[in-house]
Amino acid sequence: GSSHCGRISWPLACRPCSQSALPRACRDMVRTSPATPKALFKTPRGKGTPKSASKEAQDSECPLVKHIPEIVKTGDDVEDITREDERKAFITVVQHMWKDRSLINPTKAFVLRTVANKQNDVSVVAAFEGKVVTLQKLPVEWVAAWLVKHIGGNITLACLDLAKCKDNDIVYRLLGIVVGLPLTTVIPDEFREHVVVSHYFVSRMNLLGRQIQVRDSMKADGTYDKATGSPYTLVWDDSTGLLSRLVYSNGATSDIPAHIPIDRTWKVSAWYDDVACTIGKPPLSHALRSFFAKGQGPHSFAVIKKKFIEDLTAAKAAVSDPASAARTAAEVAVPEGDVFEKANAQRSKENSDKAREVLEKFRERKRKASEVSLV
Image 1 (cartoon, rainbow, N blue to C red):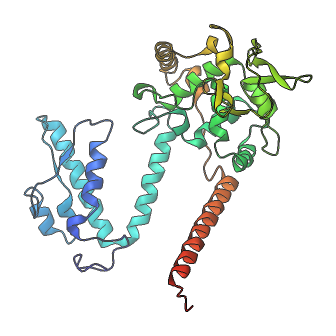
Image 2 (image 1 turned 90 degrees about the vertical axis):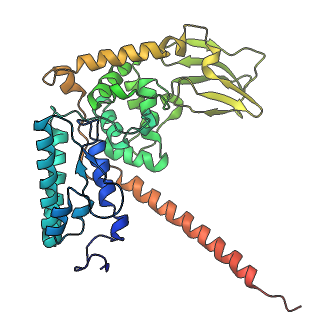
């Protein structure tokens, strides 16, 4: 144990009290609480024991108590008393766990169980967190569960696990195809509730009607047929070996101009993205959507910012009632445990192999550097 603690070995990695992680954790916890935009507590300045906590720190054998900051007075007597009671309750919990280590794991289990119950409670708002939330930053387990619920067929968690072994980003790419949005699309802060995003995705899916196309393109072994499962279908002229026509998912077609000879050596990039999908051969590259006339094909489903906000606002209004059928339909149940067990195990092995390879190269360079020529 650390000498500064003056007690038996603490089960966590102790650092000197002046660098303890507890004050920072406390401050982060209360300052980022969505229900209390202002800080509940303030951190005492200077060294030594906080003035208001000095008696508690002196009466307690736990050295962590002196790092629990004071409350910030709001001017509301009821609110201030409530905050002070919560602070004292927190101190009591810390003191008991410090004295009796057997309380730590049961307390942790209780907290995690309570959090899980709240997440399952429809009356509690569940939202995606992060400074910037894009489609490709949504929790992959949630996206997978959404795809399974709304597409079906071979789109199962087990199949997506196998598909992820072949293409680590396949889950996000399938979402991009189904909703017809770039994976870099940013979801504004006020629309990050799970049910709002889910309801909006369903409306986009119904508008584009690609769920059957995606379902039929996924094989039971996790192989996805990009030729049939992409927003664009390439039609080749067998007599010339050149690309003759593009077919969009809604049936719109566009002939390739004769002055742009595209053969099979050209490669398609971002095959899952309506906007970013290109075909090229260095130094040339063409966006597939550029071959379609304005208002046709991919342009008819393009999302401009104003329309995007309007649709999200409509989705939020539709699921605002916790008892509504729309909200129930928009809820996504994410299974517990490791959803992508096979894919994660494979990724872990690949990372280990890469690390081992780098280490071997480093050792080889070090060995060569230490060799001395006697010639």
